[in-house]
Structure formats: structure tokens, C-alpha cells
Image (cartoon, rainbow, N blue to C red; front, top):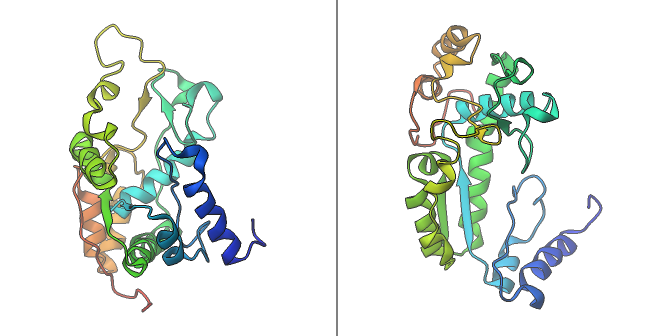
Length: 239
């Protein structure tokens, strides 16, 4: 709640992680430390709960931004086109009403890349580093490259044994066989080749070139799930 003090926010999360009724279950939450997790005393939370920390980032922030825009587009489609489990999931339905179309990356979107790349990602790492507890870094691209290997490592780190033996491939195979009903299958909203969905791809490429945003230009052109180092572009304000 907006009027909760840092102490109340921290206590709510601690109570959730330590409540006896969940003793036989794994529990946790996905939270952005600078948004809904603002003012939480993370050092105190980990000290009182012994919780494990996993930091999740998407290193290609150009694709991240395009993906966020396209998920917003999905939410405007008719209900029959959208999957369950959260916004932005597009069902595999051949229907003109479910056609997503192309996306434009505006100047405002480009200006926000610094925030998406450096500030948000570094805020996550800053919390992890200052909390003084071991943490695991998981990337979106790592999951794309091998969800089984990535989740196996998460299982080892967290002690969640089910992740070590779960058959992740069976979920990805649903609806892939010829003749199967794919109407309930979730389709990829943003392809790896951004020139397939960006209506102003060349213009964005030229802007990155003109502003000396070389790392962003490489992200734009990358046609595979490649893990990028955190890059710093000219003009980004010092923290």
C-alpha cells in the first residue's frame, strides 16, 4: 500500500516467507526493488528469513523494449486472442482479428533505453550486492538458449529439487506436431529478428549510429538469443 512505512512493507514480506502454514511448500515473489519493492529493508528481510535471491535480467534491452510494446498491443486484442496467466500472451490463432502487425520504436522509446538498460538492471544488482547474501544471476537469453540447463542451475542454487528433474521440453512441444490443435498454444510475440516487426527498423538503426549507441545497434541487429554485457552509452547521467 502507498502509505505503508518501510518497516510495514518489510514485515509483510517476512511474514509471507516465514508463515508456518507454508512450511511444506516453496514460496517467494517476483519484485522490482525500485518500484513496488521501494523502501523494503532487503538486508533485514534476508537476515530474518534466510531466503535465497535470484536476479533476473534481459540483457538485450532493445528487444526488451520492443517486446513490452508488443505485449501492450496484445492486451488490446479481443479476448479470444489472448492467453491466460498474465497480460501479453498471444494465442496461436489464425484469425485477422488476432493479427498483431508491425511496431514502431519511437524517439521516446529510444530515449528510455538507458533507463531500461543501466538503471533498472543496476538497481537489481545493487540490491543483490548490498544485501550481503549469495545470489544467482539468471538471464532471459540464458533461458532461451536452454531452459532445462538454466532451471537446473536454479534448482541447485535454491534447493528446489523439482526443478532438477522437471521435463521442460514437454511444455515447449505442446501443439508442435502436425495435425495437433494449436489454438491454446502461446506464440512468440517478438521474433529475434527485429527487422521482421519494426516498421522503422532502418531509422532506428540510423539513430543508434548517429548517437554513437554502438551496443544498442548490435542488440538491434542480433538475430539470435545472445547474452550482452551491460553497456554504457554516451550521455547517460552518472548515478
